Length: 209
Image (tube, rainbow, N blue to C red; front, side):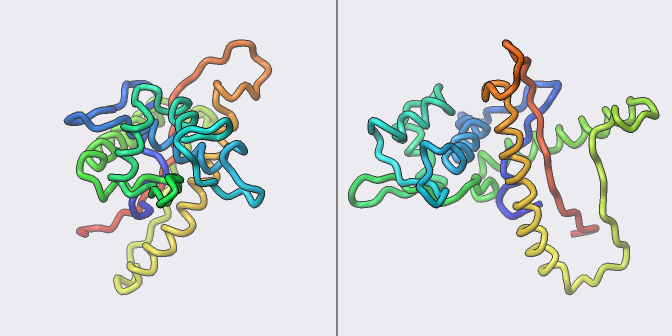
């Protein structure tokens, strides 16, 4: 799995995810905020990079971004949480700069617990679905594994670097595609679109590691 986070914590398609643990904020929504900050033209400069935001502004403020993605938290509370997670910084002029596209899940005990439990639940859900599906491959969820029983153990650090680079790129592409095709995006022709939670994950497994 890429270091820190596979772009988003698991989003379960059939059961309610474990969204809170000992009062932990809504990890999913906070991840959505970081994604939107990197993709919505209202929060990007001419080069397509995230703009530093003011808490209040007539266009593209942090408050408007927070209200879109995490309406159950005040903008001030959300900013405090993002600063604690080192996902943003505030300069001397009060401008809020985003520092990362995704949460560094494993650097925070509370978010790590939520992410781990939901990732496990999601993986089991995929396996269960595929086992129950018929022979028609179109009914199955994508699940492939690159397996090597004689891998040079000395190359594991390089494998981690390789997977972090390309796995993160894949997940960011998937994340952007899912955002464009979300029910609330209004890109489809249906008047009312049904919504469900889905996820795409990448992981690394090392025997007896």
